[in-house]
Length: 282
Image (cartoon, rainbow, N blue to C red; front, side, top):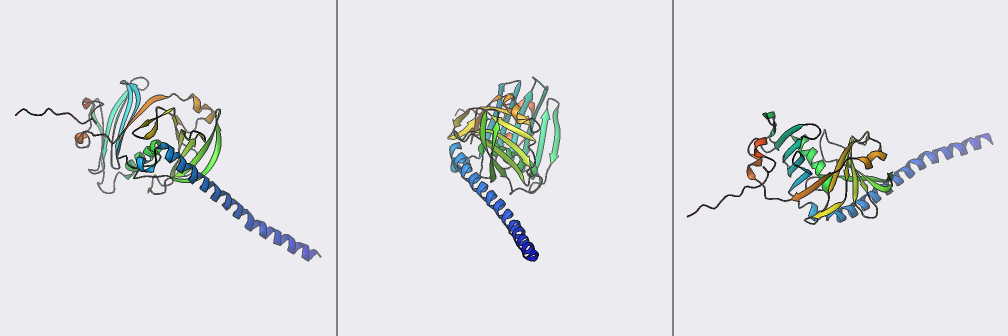
């Protein structure tokens, strides 16, 4: 009798050992399916995959004060230019240009060029490229050159809002950005993205982007207001984040010399614009 009981108990324990992992895997698979489904809905609400992947360059302006403004120009996938001026809080000014075709990363301030890094044209600078491609996905969800993979979905309450969170990972990049991810906090009714948290290897976020109301630019839904907070900040404080105006332009006709010459403060914040040349008289 005792032997029979022992056998029965052992048989039960073995069944549980196999059953629990199967249930856990089934739950993960279901969450993955739900994450993929919601992701497709959000991409469609953003403008659709074809429209998002048609973006070849993007100009993002944060702030509406000439003394406190950041202008980022992404010429995908290998060029980036930034004008960043903050006289309000930190009193700094710099302009940066990266051209991976030439293998250069340059920064300038009022004193002239303050940082110059020579990169290997073919393989070097990948960390710069991958970093700004990930950031572009924080705004656009997807580009022709980068697309995060949905992993699972969860629900969180942020302030008074109950949001669906799509956890994603970038598995196409080499180190140091391998397995970095973005968690998208989505309003389940409007499909608007309220927050995007940057994660590394599934760990807690190290900083979080916050988005206000949206508008449509060239068929793509983009935020009009933007704020950023550290990942260590409690989520119930996210609603207190200072927000600044944000605007977007896509596929602009830009100055071809922008990535051919070193950046300079003297060129001004409109250096990206294509210059108009007068037609010579005959």
